[in-house]
Image (cartoon, rainbow, N blue to C red; front, side, top):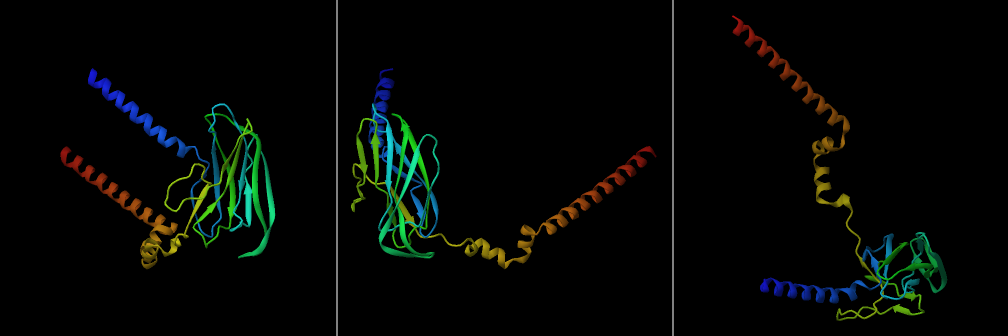
Length: 236
């Protein structure tokens, strides 16, 4: 029993230590999911946990990148929260596939709601077109509590990979995936018309089913005939 108790004590201590080390990272304001394709339109959620035991989060202000402005930003209504989207004129127009972009969203503010201690909330945004000349976008965020405290999540990632105390929400951008039509399976299907017709042609599939059904019926008839002959021989 003493061995079991010691083992349980060590396990509890290790679990507590692991949880203590993991909690600070989980408590950051983050972008979910954390990656998106360059040049695409995407939907993300700013996940905001409440870090205080005696105060609630009452306001969230997200700043959008000015060095890589986004032409399209829309927000999903969230019951209990008011949202304000602010646009600003860019110092220099940015050329896009849809023309010169002279204004872009600078901030999105959610207020009027409440994130209680021990809870989190997600604020969803649809946006694009994501830039192709960078591998990340930062969204500095201010989190205001009911006691007047403001936490500024605005620190950029460090070059050595270590994490700051208040890192800005980060969206990593990856190269666009290859077109499905260029995949090996698609190429193989294109090179095999017979296989493609079996998979994609409903009429071909229906004909095959009828053929198999007819063969099954014929086998059934033969079985009945053989059974009848067997009964005749047995009677004789």
